[in-house]
Image (cartoon, rainbow, N blue to C red; front, side, top):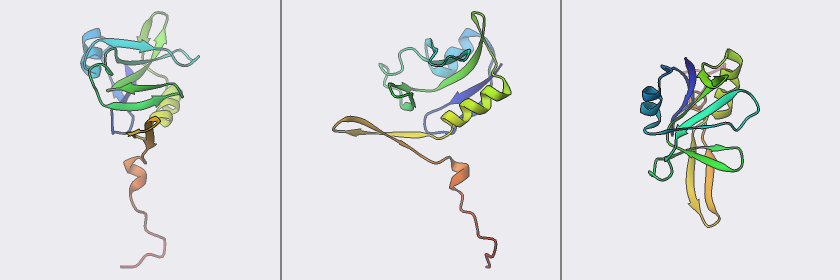
Length: 130
């Protein structure tokens, strides 16, 4: 099934994943937890014990949580996981495209969204000469 893979410090990317429990657990590094933060029939699947295990913080979820460790986003069909549609892939890839860095602060944790590597390349102006 085609999912969106989101790894700490990397751009979110489409990924082909076998729809098997042990494969999902391998990807997230342990027991899986499905979160349903949106009204759309999609799930965010992460490591159930990611924060307790001290996995690296990955992305902010809304304005209320931070996901630790690698996670993926997939569709839901009835009670089963399924691949994302092309439209869903575009939507969630845009939402989670940029890696985020987390810094300790007096108020708690500060999140800094970094630019994707593809947009960090310097573009030469049209009249550029050597």
